[in-house]
Amino acid sequence: MGMNGSAHRYETLDGLRGVAALAVMFGHFGLILGLFSAPNGLMAVDTFFIMSGFVIAYSYGERLRRGMSPWTYLYGRVVRLYPMFIIGLLLGCAVLYYGVYSGAIAYRTVDILRGAALNVFYIPFPNALTLYHETGQIFPANPPAWSLFFEMVASGAFLLLVGLSRRSLLVVVVLCYVTMIAAGIHYRHGGTWIEVHCGYYTSNLPGGLPRVGFGFSLGMLLQQLARDDIAGSRIRALIGRLPYPSFLLYAATLVIFHIPRTAHGLFPLLALATIIPAVVFVGAQMHLRPGLELNVAKFLGWISYPIYCVHYPFVRLVTFMRDRGHGSGFLLMTAGTAVSLVVAMALTRWYEEPVRAWLSARKNALSPLRTPSPLRASRAKQL
Image (cartoon, rainbow, N blue to C red; front, side, top):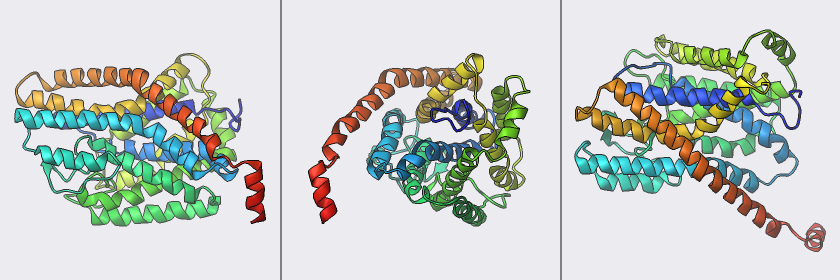
C-alpha cells in the first residue's frame, strides 16, 4: 500500500511510541532509585508531542476540513486519553495515601485530595509542596500526567492550526521554537545555559506551552511533507535495503535518549529541531510486512500509553521499599518494571479497551439526535 493510501497505518510510529514510553519508565525507575540517569531521556516526551501532531493531523485533518464537528473530534480525543489517565491518577492517589499513612513521606492527605480534585479534570495543581526532593509537581499523584495536560491543550489548538498552509505552519513552528529558547534561557539552572525541558513543575509550567507547541506543530508539518511525498520515495528506497529497519530506528532513538551529556542544554535543543523530527519522518515512511517487525510494532504501540500512565505509582512503591531496606535497587527496578508491564497489559485488555468501545458507541448512538432533520435544515437555510 502506498503512503497516501486511505487505510495506511503508521506501524513504525506505533512501535516508536512504545520505545519512548519504555524509555520514560526505565528512566524514572533508574533516576528515583539512584541507579542511573539519562540526561536526554526527557526528549522522549517531546518525541510523543511530535508524533502526536503527526498522527492527529493524519487522522483528523482531512475529516475536519470536510465538515467533522469540533465536538466529535474533541470527544474522540477524550475517549482516547481519559480512561487510562484516570486509572493512573487513582493508582497514584492510593500510593500517595499509603506513603502518608505508613510514614514513608511527609505529605498531607488534604494535599492529595486538593491535587486530585483539579487533576481529575486535567487541570494542573499549582503548589510549593515538596515530595521526594521535588517541589511543585503539578500532577503530584502521577507526575508524568503533566504531558497529558499539554497534550489536551495541543488537541484543542489543533482546531485552529488544521487549516493553515505549509508556510503558515512553518511560521508557527519557528515562533514556538524561538519562544522555547527564550523560556529555556529564563528557566536555566545550574550549569545549563538553556533548559528546554519545562512544564512539569509549578515553577516552570509556562515553559511547557512553547515546548508542546513546537513539537505538535512540527509533527503537523512533517505530516504535510509525508502526505505530499517530499523526499519520501528516496527514503523508502534506502529503507528497503536494510534488514529490520524499524529495529534499527528504535535502537538509534534509544541511543539519542541516552547520550550522557546535554552540552549545557544545547544538545536537546538542537536534537529536537533536527534528529528527532528526522527519526519520526523516516519512521513514517516504513510500511512493515507481516511478521516479527509488525508484531513487535503493534505490541509496543498497544502498550505505550498504558505503561506511560500507570508506571509511576509503582516507582514510588519500590522507592518506599528501598527506603525501608527491602531489596537492592536493581532488584526493585526489575520487579517494579515487570509489575508495571503486567498491570498495564491487564488494564488495557479488561478495562481500557471495553471502556473506550462503550464510550465510542455512546457517541455514535447520540450523534443521530444531533443531526437536524431535512425540514429543519431547509428552514435554517431560509433564515
